Amino acid sequence: MDAFSPTWIAAQLGGLVALGFIIIAFASRQDDRLLVYLIFANVAFAVHFGFFGQWVAMGMSVLVVLRILLARRFPRNLTVMSLVLVASGLVALATWREWYDLFPLLAATFGTLAMFLFRGLVMRAMLAGVALSWLINALIIGSIGGAIAEALALGTNLLTIWRLHRARHRPESG
Image (cartoon, rainbow, N blue to C red; front, side, top):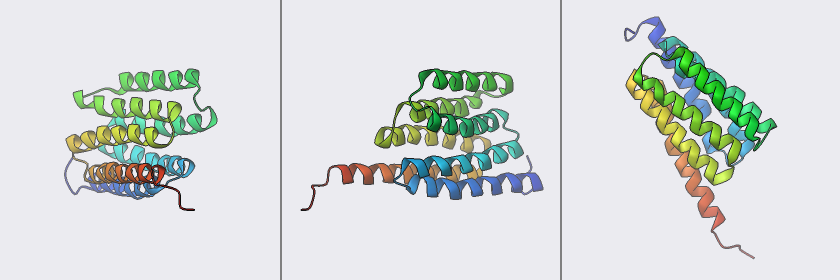
């Protein structure tokens, strides 16, 4: 893709919109707000990856929206989780083009496990692994907006993990 072409600019703008939602999401200490903002971020990422022609990444971003909704409605449901994992594998298989399509699939897998099996600190730690997988993908495909978004998502998420951990171990004032 030619740098500064209308498609390239649109792709980068999609990444920047996702960036805004990611920062709001991971800065939240409430799981419900985190998940709602992640839905908006992944819609923006799906558009972003579509402009880049990254079909596995686009498919995984669309499935992330579905996964978040299902995980909220069916928490800890191993059958639903397994169906989401199978759907992710099938979408990846149908759209796979390059070796680095592995990173969106890893992100989707880690994210599915995080959303269905964990809450709080452990969920956010798994989501840090998701952000790292997406960051690697963004760097490989040359996504400026995506790389910034995921680097900030990773940093913001790690900061929130630290804040939650510190709050959990702070002595109660009486």
